[in-house]
Length: 466
Image (tube, rainbow, N blue to C red; front, side, top):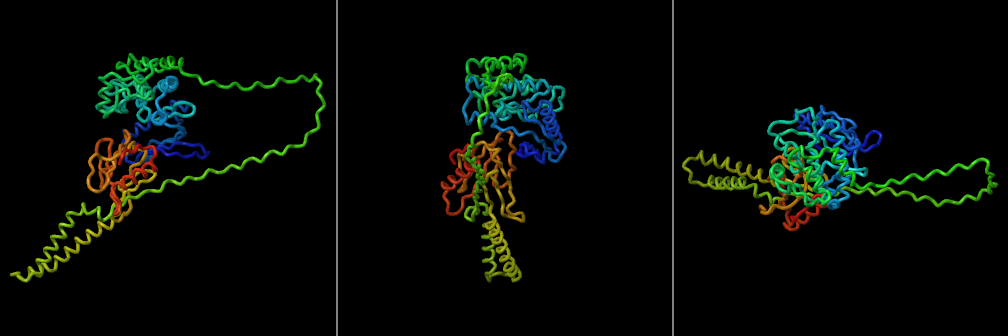
C-alpha cells in the first residue's frame, strides 16, 4: 500500500513515516481503511502497538507517523534464529493474547494478525499494521465477495463472509504460534489452496510442543464459539510463561545516630590522578553498495530489430531494381531512384537510433531498476522493484535467448510492476526481469555477477542458482 520511512521528530526521536501510494488517494475504500487504521492504533495506545504521533488520511498522498519500534518481525526472527522452544512459545502467546485483549477491549478487530505484523522489540512483541482493522460496530469495510486478510491466517468465517469478530484474531493467533514453532497450520501452496484448507481441512499442529498443542488446537477450531477468548487464553498461557526476574534495588544504608561519637577526620589524602578517559572513536560511515549496471549492447538488440532489418533489405532491393535501365516508363524509374535511397536511409537511421540507446538494468541498494536510454526522457526508470517487496531471486527453468532472466518472487500483497518492456509479470506473485548480456561477457559470468550484486545489495533476499 505504500512505503514506510524512518525519520526523526523535531526533538530527535525516531519515528516511522507511512506514506500511501499516490494512486490510492482517489480510492475512497482505501481512505476508509486508512482512517480505520489510524483510529484503531490511537484507541489501543502505544503499549501493545506503535503509538500514533500524527496522521492525515485526507492528504494526497495519505500519511501517518508513529513511534519507531526497533526489532525484527516474527517471520524474520524464525527464519534467522530458528523455531521457538516451548518456553518462548508460552511467552510469545501470552504477550500476543495480552495485546489482543487490549485491542478487543477498544471494540476493534485486527483481522490481519500474522508473523509479518508482529515486531519482536526489546520490551516484548508489538502488534502493528491495523490497515484492515475495523470497529465491531462498523461494517462499511466488508463487501460481498471480498476477502480481506492473509491466506493461512484467516478464520473460516472470514473466508466465507460470515460474522467477523474477536474470535478471528484468536484463530490467527493460533496460526502464528504454529508458525513460530516452525510449522504451518495449513501447509504451503497457492493462496486459494490455503483458504480451502482453512475452511475444510484440519490444522497441522504437529510442530507445536505437546504441552501447548491442545491450547493451540482450540484456537484453530472451525466454530468461533469453540475458541477461547483472548482474556481466557492469556490466563492459560501466563501460568506457564517464564518470568524474567527483576533485580531489587540495593537497600539504603541505615542512618547513624548523632549521639554516637565520631572519630577525628583523617587528613585529606593527596588526590590520585585518574587515568585519562578514552576518547570515543566515531563510527566509520559505511558507504552504500555501488550499483551494478547491466547494459544492453548492439549484439543483444538485433533480435528486436527483425522488422527494421527486413525493411532495410527490402529498400535495398528496390533501390537496386530502380537503377536498372529496362524500364518502359521513364517517370516510374526516376521516382524509384528518388524515393528508394530515402527509405533506405530512414531504416538505417532507425537501426542506429535503437542501437545507440539501449535499455539498462541496474542492481542497486533500494531495488532493481529497468531504465531506457531512448527518447527525450533518457535514463528515466521504466519500472523499479524495491528489494523490500522481493522474497527470493531465481532463474526460470527455461532460458530464452542469450539474455539472463531473473525470476523475482514478491512478498504477499506487493504491487506487481506494470507489464513494460524488460519486465514481464508471470503468476500473481512472480515477476520476470530480463538482464541483457554485455559484449565480451559469458552467460555464466553474468549469472555470477548478478548473484553477487543481489546478495550485496539485498542480503535478506534468498538467491537461488542463477
